[in-house]
Amino acid sequence: MTDFLVKRFIKNYEHVEKVSVRTAYGVLASMVGIFCNILLFLAKLSVGIALGSISVMADAFNNLSDAGSSIISFVGVKMASKPADEDHPFGHGRMEYISALVVAFLVIQVGFSFLKTSIGKIRTPEALHFQLASVVILLLSIVVKLWLGLFNRRLGERIDSKVMMAVFTDSMGDVITTAATILSLIFFRITGWNIDGWVGACVALVVMWAGVSIAKDTLEPLIGEAIEPEEYERISDYVEKYDGIVGSHDLIIHSYGPTKKMASIHAEVPNDVSVEVSHEIIDRIERDAMQELGIFLVIHMDPIETKDEQILAIRKQVEAIADNLEHGVSVHDLRIVEGIQQINIIFDMVVPRDYDKEQAREVIALLKQKLKEADQRYECVITVEHSYIGEAKEE
Image 1 (tube, one colour):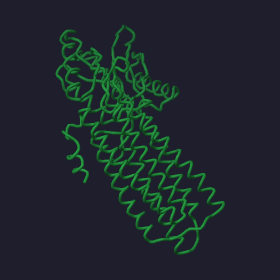
Image 2 (cartoon, rainbow, N blue to C red):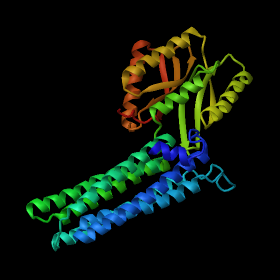
Image 3 (spheres, helix red, strand yellow):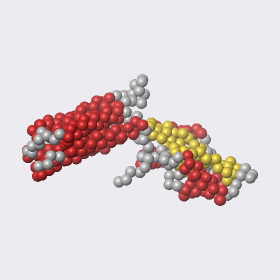
Image 4 (cartoon, rainbow, N blue to C red):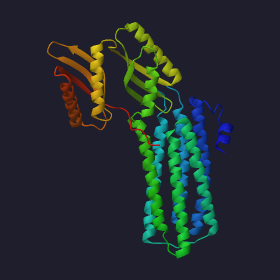
């Protein structure tokens, strides 16, 4: 069904890198979400009124809020597709994140409202009626929500959409809450105990938690998130594949929406090659990165020694010691100033993001100690930097 809808309503659906195609995906997901959630709202509200069940009606209005969320997502996707203008030179891509954040607050508000209602039902229980037809309708709603969630996940993975992945998370929460509602009705049928208010409270808490999770996932790209190791490796490998580039470091990525990224990186070039030649290579990499990776890449050129055997040996020695110190510690931009009584080793050292000043000082002291043990003439001048790379995700 997903492939049928995509092929039927999205022209050039395979070219997901195009803004127009990506917008079409977002519009399709929003329209399907609106239709499914309004249908579920009407069905569940009818069941809830017939049963006198607050948990079923809470579930129904949760679906109505989901329909409203789909409308907001639709507006957000359309606004995000607007091109850059004089006031917004980087485009409007972050509107998609903002719309997802609005959706998150709506979900939290709906959950909070029904938490208050459920607490009232716990204090003053009302009559509950069991009907098999109602349970069947709720079971069908689980099937619809499960499909809708998987539909959004598939589309979200294709176009790397935070909004669609948020809808997937919310839909899975709906599946859980509706299943809990059914269990409370079956429990009432078997035991005669009315736990509707308690289940309604649990449903409300799950809804609120889903909203908080959506907000957290949406705020990360707005605040500025760490670079995924795979993305860091992909861009670094791309830069380093060019002849004339001997290494890279200090990659930073700024996201202005799912399809608009800017990045900067330091590229190491041999110091015996003319500036004009290295600059030509850098320019070519920047142009190619825009065309092939879709990233506006700015490259800083770092000349390094590639032939002096003594400097290469010292660099190798420093890197080996740093690698054995702590996980995530690395060095770059190493320079040597040799005197009669001492050898100054000047370099930058990258430490994990969670290191505080004291931990950084301890690593520096240990590194200096190890180098002194190797050669008493070594004196280090170290600049500490924190890593921008995130943790590798577990499969």
